[in-house]
Image 1 (cartoon, rainbow, N blue to C red):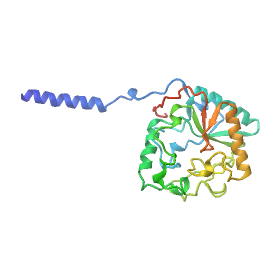
Image 2 (cartoon, one colour):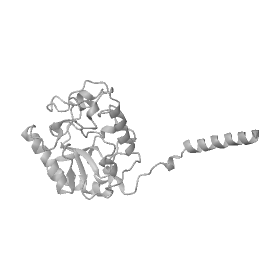
Image 3 (cartoon, helix red, strand yellow):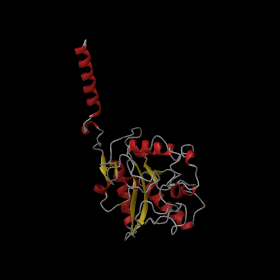
Image 4 (cartoon, rainbow, N blue to C red):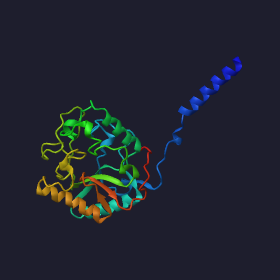
Length: 255
């Protein structure tokens, strides 16, 4: 009996070690149908906010192991056509986010449940009670970004202006304030900053300046021309109409 017990304990320990010592090759791998956007558009600007602390969580997001922008080949090729049109008028695209792993979305959800953690409220959701982020649709358990054909982006003039560098702990300014009073993004003026949880971020909001509306419509018309559709509550958010994975939510890390 004693030998049986010892063997059982050994077997249990072995199974546990196998369960938790999962080799990296067992993790979800990036499909060949995804590309690095800089391999397709070498001159595009990147400001991948979830790879660093300047975002509504205030920290690097799970799954963002690099500041790359990964997209499906179809989305990347369509975006290259937008870039070609913009370059004719001395503008370039700047990307804030592309493919987003499900683990990152899970990180968003966990953060939203931490009601007492409001260290980024002053900039990203200054007029909203954090406990209402799910109700108001700002946070969800799934994101179109995880399907690989959604991108958050803006337009930047050429030559590219200086970009303010975020310093953790610096004083934050509300994302809906005038351009000169909010964080110094080098984007043309879109009326709010990126990831601004506010009604002024709604693409066709009428309570922004005329030039800001024109800037949004320039981005929207070019993106629609090349096969993207806008999410009406976020001027920066576009999804390829004919996305190749309309029902697949990937979770491979961005390496």
